[in-house]
Image 1: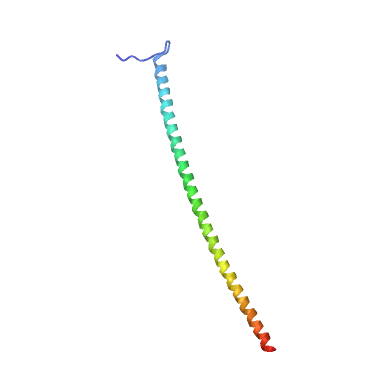
Image 2 (image 1 turned 120 degrees about the vertical axis):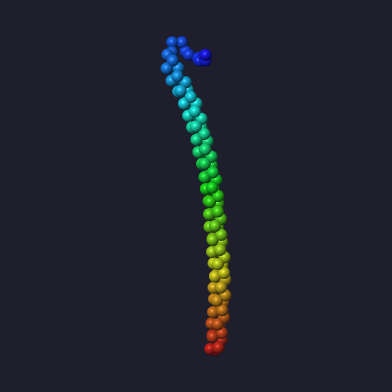
Length: 98
């Protein structure tokens, strides 16, 4: 015959209910802890992915800015060359008139 712990004065149905409650508490606690652990892992994974996306976005914007700056430099250089050419032509016209 199997002996079970039974508090003094407790009816058998109360002992069963107490065991079920204890089992549920232990089982649910484990499930909750596991769910919390999985949520924390998922949160860490999402944060890491967010940092990578942010890093690549910043690199992309930097590349675009650098390309724009280079094109702007080339344009300014070309404008300076054309202005020098115009000044040279105006000088020649002035010399030819005299």
